[in-house]
Length: 434
Ligand code: SDX
Image (tube, rainbow, N blue to C red):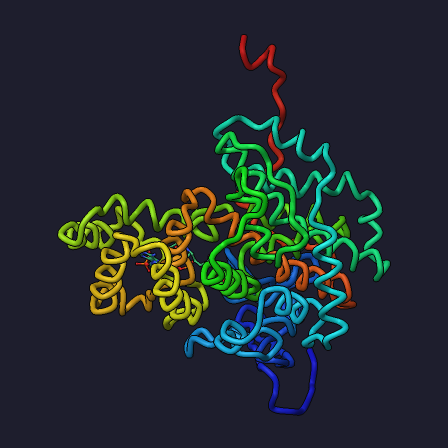
């Protein structure tokens, strides 16, 4: 029992023993460890918490990203996402996330130069990627290839060396677009395009995706800008599923490539980054505005999920969705309007007025409109989450770096509630089967 004497505490009474405990409250939380003193006797383990999906559990202290889900606020290192999307660029935001402050001009120029000159991959990575089936999902290729990079840079396991950490983070931000583009070209049976260091980060990515026999692929500047904004919007999002995976795997002190490969795997899932691909498939399946009422009925009957809607944290409109919805107009000015946009807008209108969704605070999230833009870029749906992964890489790395430097962090090893059998006597197969 603790007697702190101040009011910033929780007084807990264990009715099994009549004992009372004072537990300190800090930053709106109590330390789960403080519950372990609450026990009925010395032989019985103390209390723990049970929280599937960590719905109400903080796993770390972080200063990278702030979200207010009720108000629909998102800030990277304190800067509102709306301002960054409008006034910054992806590499500057990547610097901000990782270094914690905006770069000076020399810092920015050095950062851009370093990343530009690390976009190439070892030729063996190309050979490795060519070994995938012709129809391999690019996210599976990306997850495997990012993990494989740890074997090309074995020194990356020395995570206590700041210079080594910096080099590996530069390499990962630089090479993710190359890996993503090569996975795309693999699926198309087209030759892999090498990076063009004369182009900006995002323009170079578009070149590696779409360049054919022309000397230089010059993407429309409006498309380059729109994709750069989408990368900014996806750059980080505090303790989402894939960042939690990066932190959990990173807590074993493995190299950053292996930790980020785990993040790619988590992002692949349809409830997380795979939702943008699922939204397009859902809109195609609905097919026309006339079919929306039937689909909404299917959602209410529990037979469907309205993909691209809902969020663990946002109980208001995802601020990123608002910006993406606006970016749609810029992209469609170049590519022509995606016919599915009309269905998406009607679906959003109906859902936002329907008690079922209002009661559950289900609003469009980052994935609802992004797929429409990606499709306008001529990306197939299976590439959408690869684009999400490229954008999220600086965020994963910023969170990984914070974990590695956080003295309070330990290897992730949660408890469980055991529900299985106990102390059974083993019967050898010969007796069991006779
Ligand atoms: C991302 O965490 C992040 O920050 C993620 C992300 C990031 O930047 O990293 O923002 C990116 O992953 C965005 C989310 C993309 N996923 C989808 O769009 C898939 C559809 N959405 C849902 O699966 C769901 O909303 C989640 C997974 C996003 C959130 O799920 P929660 O927080 O666990 O909420 P829940 O499943 O407990 O839902 C609460 C209620 C339930 O109804 P009841 O059982 O109480 O009756 O809302 C319902 C759910 O059935 N519900 C939905 C729904 N989402 C929740 N019903 C229909 N359609 C939906 N989309």
